[in-house]
Image (cartoon, rainbow, N blue to C red):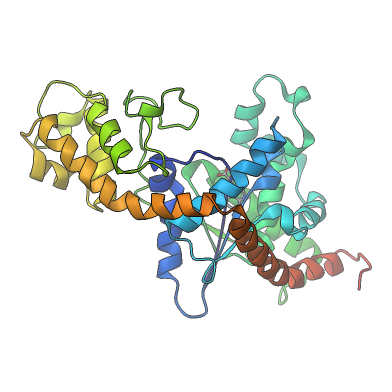
Length: 338
Ligand code: TRP
C-alpha cells in the first residue's frame, strides 16, 4: 500500500481545514503498517495555474507545511514535501502530455467551472492541471489516493492516462505505472462559518469571528464559540430537529467531529439543553483538542528555518523514490537518457 496525496498551499489555516483534509491524512499515516508508506505534498506547482501572488504562495507553502506537522503529520514516518523541489513532477507531466487527450481534459468539470465562459483567457497550466495531478501520483506508484469528492474525476483521469501509457508503451508483464484508487473519506465533516451556518468556514471571510484559526489560543477559541451565531431554541434530541437550523447543525457537527462521534450521539447527550450550556462544553472540547496543535504551530511559524529543513529532507526522499519510475517512463518513450 502506497498512499499519495496533495493539497494546495494556503495560509491562515482553520478548523475547517483540519477537520476536512488534514485530520484524514494524519489518520491514514497512523494506520500505516510495516512496509506501507505515505507521501504528502504541497501542490505549489498547481498553484501557479491561476493568477497568484508569489509572496503569498511562499508564505502559504510554509504555513501549510507547518500546519500539517502541527496537526500530526510526522516527517520521519511520512514523506512531506513541496512539488517545486522535486523536478520529476514537472518532467513526468510533460511526458504524460503526449498520452493525455484534449477531449479528456475538456470534459473535466473543474476545468469547466474554473474557466467559465472565458476558456480562451485561461492559462495552459489550468487546462493541463489534471495531467500534473496524474504525474503526482503515478510517479510514486500510488495505490491509494485520499481525495475529496470533487477530485475523484481527476483521479479517474490519472487511471486513464496510466492505462493508455502502459498499453501504448509498456509490455503487459512490466507496466510502467500502477493504476491508483481514489479513496474518498466517509465522514469528511463540512465545517461552516460561525457567523453564517450556510457559508463554508473560509480563510477569506473578512470576519475573524467566523472561523477558529489553528493558531488561536484558548481565550480566542472560547470567545468565538460564545459569540457564534445561534437561534433561541434549545437543541433537539434527534437529528431531524436540526433541519432549517444551519447554525445549530454546524455547532453539533463540530462537536461530533472533534469527539469522534456523530450528531445523533451528541444530541442524546445535549438534546433539550440551550446554547448557554452547549457552547461552553463545545469551547472546552475545542480547546482540549486544538491547544496542542496551536502551540506546536506557533512554535514552527516562529522558526521558518525548521520548516525549510523539514521540506528539504522530504524532497530529498521524494526525489529518490520518484527516480526509477521517471527513468522507466523516459525509456519506454524511446527518449535517450542515461
Ligand atoms: N487538485 C487537488 C486539490 O485541489 C490537489 C492535488 C494536487 C492532489 N495533486 C494531487 C490531490 C495529487 C491528490 C493527489 O485538492
